[in-house]
Length: 139
Image (tube, rainbow, N blue to C red; front, side, top):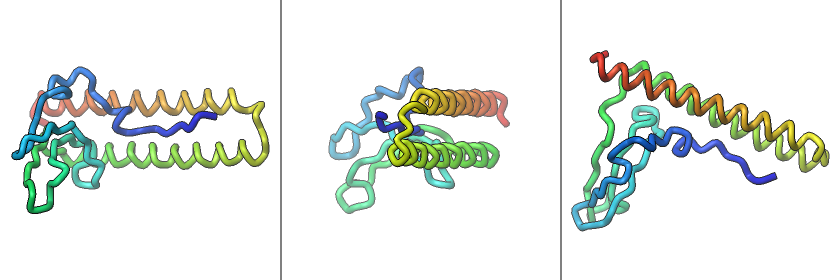
């Protein structure tokens, strides 16, 4: 079975974001890629930073998203934990498949993985919509 990992960055990628392909450069001219923080305080919040950020070479850091409200932090951390748990479950399922030789269960397992992946994608889209509505209505 091909390695399957539910990647939060890929799941929560907003392909419609006009800043996704923005040409942002640090103080010494390096082209920066939009990254996503998964820390407790800024989970899901996107930013640009120089690869040398934190050293004396460059101090460029720029948030793409505004501050995340407490409810959103709560929801994102729950979703991130769910993804982590699902990744662990996938590892266990793969080990079981290899140990038991249960190749006949492969199709069922792949359907379960795809179903779980779809659920996470839907939850992420729902959260993004809820977050956008929260910002639109000043909540």
